[in-house]
Amino acid sequence: MPALREKVTSAAEAAVWVKDGMTVGMSGFTRAGDAKVVPFALAERARHEKLQITLMTGASLGNDVDRTLTEAGVLARRIPFQSDPVLRNAINRGEVMYVDHHLSETVELLRTKQIAPIDVAIIEAAAITETGAIIPTTSVGNSASFAILADKVIVEINLTQPAELEGLHDVFIPKRRPEREPIPIMGVEDRVGTTAIEIPPEKIVAIVITEKLDSSSTILPPDGETAAIARHLVEFFKKEVKLGRLTESLLPLQAGIGTIANAVMSGFIDSPFEHLRMYSEVLQDSTFELFDAGKLDFASGSSITLSPEKSASVFADIERYKDRLVLRPQEVSNHPEVIRRLGIIALNTALEADIYGNVNSTHVQGTHMMNGIGGSGDFARNAYLSIFATKSIAKGGKISSIVPMVSHVDHTEHDVDILVTEVGLADLRGLAPRERAQVVIQNCVPSPYKEMLEEYVAEANARGGHTPHVLEKAFSWHERYRETGSMLPNRHASDR
Ligand code: COA
Image (cartoon, rainbow, N blue to C red):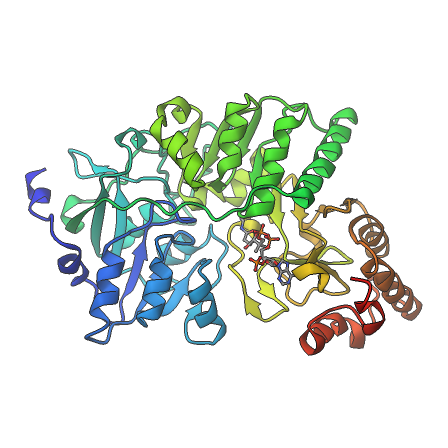
C-alpha cells in the first residue's frame, strides 16, 4: 500500500507521537513479539524532556524494555504483568504504580472505558497486508485490541521474524456486552477469527523496520525436584484414567509460566498419555518437546517463548508445526467461558500455599511483588481441575512454601483442587478444611516444617472453628524469617 510506504521512518521520529502523560499499549507477551526499538527511543527522549507514560502490554517484555524504561523514569504506571528485576524493585519501592490484572481482563476494561484509553499502540508485525492489516509475530496478547482501540498505531516490522508466521494467528474480538454472543470455540483447534489485525490503515502513523530478535526464555532445565513433581502428577493422572474419570488423552492442558510448569509438562514425554492437547497461554519449550515426541496433537496459546536452542530449531522450520498451532488474543486464550467449556486441566505455580489450600503466586513474604497473577486466576477459577505446584522449600530451606496462612491470597481454597510438591500430592477435592490440612501436611511437607505444621494445627483445632487458626501465630513463620533470615526456629537451624 503506497500510502503506508510513506509512513516508514526512524524509531526516534515514530516515538515523537508519544507525549508526556499518554497511555501506550505495546505488543509483547512473555518476552515474545514485543516492540523492540521505539521503546528505546522513548527512553532516549526522557533524558532531555519530561516523558512519563502508562504502559500496557500483553504480559512481560524481553529485550530489557521494562528495565530501560524504568531506568529512564518513563514508567509512571505499568499494566497488567511484568517479570523484570529492575522494574520489580521500582514497583516495590513504590515508584512505579503497578496494576496486576487477570490477563483476560485488561482489554475488557479498556473496551468499556473503565480505565484510561490507549492513545498510541506500538505493535510488532511480521508484515502488513495489501489491505493494511497487521500480521502479528510470536505473540498476539493484547495487540489486536490495543490497535483497534488506540487513536494512533505505530508498527514495528521485524525482518527477523519468519514470514511463515502468517496464518498462525486467530484474531477474534468478542463483542461489547450486553450484545456479546458465545465465543464459538468448541475444540482447542477451532479457528474463529482472522489471521491479521484489521484496522483502518489511516490509523497507522509510523512504520519502523527492525531486525532485533525476541529475547529467549529464562526457564531453567528440569531438576530432581521438578522431575519428582512431574512424576507425582503423572501417577495421579494414571489413577484418574483407571477410575474412568479421564481418558488417556486427558483433557486440554494449560501450563503456567516458569521453570516448574515447563518441567512438569516435559514429564509427560515419558508418560503413557497420548494425543494430548493444550489450551494454554504461553507455549514454552515443553510444548515442542511433546510435539516432537509424538505426544501432543495440538496447542493453542497466546505466545511462543523458547530457549535459544529451541527457538533456533522451531522457527527455522515453523511450517513443520504450523498446522498444529494457533495463537489467539489473550482474552480468548484465557477466556473463562472457553476454559469452562473445554474442561481445562490447569497447572500453575505457587510461591507459597497454606494448609487449607489458599495460594499466593505473587507476593514474596506478603508484600513484595514478584511477577503478577498473570493468567493463573483466569485458568484456576474456571478449570476442570486446578493444580498448583511448588517446591516445598525455597532459599535452601530457610523458607517453607507451605505455611500456616498465606501472606497474600491470589487463589482461594475454592479454586485449588490439587497441591503438589516434590514430596507428594494432596488431592483436596471434596475435603473440608480440617481434612485438607491433614492431607497437605502429610503429603506435601518435609521435616521439620511438617512437625511444625502438625503442632500448629493441633493448637488451632483445640481452639475450634470450621477453618481453625491460631491467628496471633498465623504469620509467625514470616515474622521469624524477617527477623532471623529463616522460618526455622533456632532449635531446627542446625538441622539444615
Ligand atoms: N518465598 C520467597 N521466594 C520464593 C518462594 C517463597 N515462598 N518460593 C519460591 N521463591 C523464589 C525462588 O527461590 C526463585 O528465586 P530466584 O529466582 O532468586 O532463584 C523464584 O521464587 C522462582 O521460583 P521457582 O521455584 O524457580 O519457580 P518458577 O520459575 O516456576 O516461578 C512463580 C514461580 C510463582 C514466580 C511464577 O510461576 C509466577 O510468576 N507465577 C504467577 C503468574 C502465573 O502463574 N502465570 C501463569 C498463568 S498462564
